[in-house]
Amino acid sequence: MNKLLIKGGRPLDGTVQVSGAKNAALPIMCAALLTDGRLDLTNVPKLMDVATMAKLLGQMGVGIDRDGGGRMTLQADAISEPVAPYELVRTMRASILVLGPLVARCGRAKVSLPGGCAIGQRPVDQHLKGLAAMGVRLSVDHGYIHAEASRLVGARIVMDMVTVTGTENLMMAAALAEGTTVLENAAREPEVVDLANCLIAMGAKIEGAGTDLIRIEGVAALSGAVHPVMPDRIETGTYLAAAAASGGRIKLTGAAPGTLDATLGKFREAGARIHCGGDTIELEMAGRPSAVDLRTAPYPGFATDMQAQFMAVDAVALGTSVITENIFENRFMHVLELQRLGADISIQGNTAVVRGVEKLQGATVMATDLRASASLVIAGLVAEGETVIDRIYHLDRGYESLEQKLAGLGAHVQRLA
Ligand code: EPU
Image 1 (cartoon, rainbow, N blue to C red):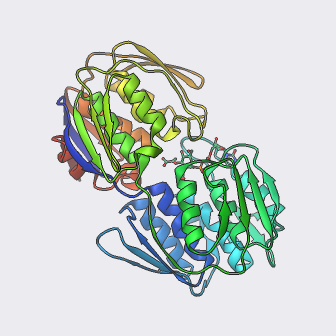
Image 2 (cartoon, rainbow, N blue to C red):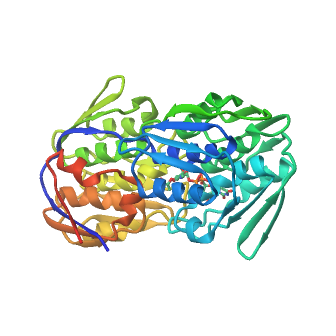
């Protein structure tokens, strides 16, 4: 099991190239299931989750080619087996994103229920409710969702809560349905917009992506397309947090500043000087950050995927902050590990009170999920002495070339076998 050794205590300084967004690439790869045409993607990040998705699609007969850069072509001219097995779905919940495209294209699908997850229950009832409204017959047995329909029919679907992959699954299914589908209370995340743009390039008729009401007029068939995956706003925010916590300076290139308003606002509140160009973000934090309160919310609110990393900033800030997690019921697992590094944090339900300390101290800690791991890396970078982070496979799921990128910022980070 790989570990990361971090020698912390120095401000970060340098430039980092942002990778393509994991949470845009995964649904967009699934969109390849909707057509026998070739989908040419660029800016696809090299990540474990992307490899898992490629394996899952490959098992269904999708032809996939990748080059050493970010280019990936996918072609689903024939789908041999519209099945997503438990072994893959349990390692990556985003596998549920094949359900909508498969049933829309093949008229049937068998997809494992994702099961429990470290950060919360994460049910998929909204995905199923939406598909049922489009005429899909659904049953669940032996841990698998069985879906069947001759042709999906458009429907008006009001989602009970804002769900990102739920919106994406239904948008993909609706693209091939007969008639018009209206998704109300849809997720407004930029990754939903990126998927919609890819589907539109494939010939789908979609309006309103990026708002809470998306209208999809189904078409009989979609074609191949060329699409660049958007920059990863959470990776961007993670490096900004590392620079801010360490009192350093960073320039991110290949970024999409317009997708980070809430996050950038919080860094400004913490005292950072920020300058955005077309696809660059520069941040400078002179000395310790000031404590900043935050509440996670669906986009355009502060992203739950940035909560753990910002907590690491608040852990070394001047003053006390209150962090409220409103999206997932169990997304404070980093707190116990941050405490091992000397952070002063107490939890009451979905609220964490963080009393900033002047220094953290290196220790051995355990990564529990992707963003929790990122917060431990940030804490390790500012802690005095050596920090060893165990179970870093979580990081490989979502951060491309993490050690190299951090090394480019002057950090001492080493992977241990
Ligand atoms: N929910 C339901 N029923 C549903 C769907 C969702 O109750 O049918 C609940 C969830 O349990 C949660 C809330 O609704 O409490 C929001 O969940 P959502 O469905 O939006 O999450 P997701 O689509 O499964 C995506 C990202 C997550 C990110 C969340 C929230 C992908 C592949 N994953 O998950 O990313 O945290 O949206 O923004 O897009 C990560 O990258 O580390 C990550 C966990």
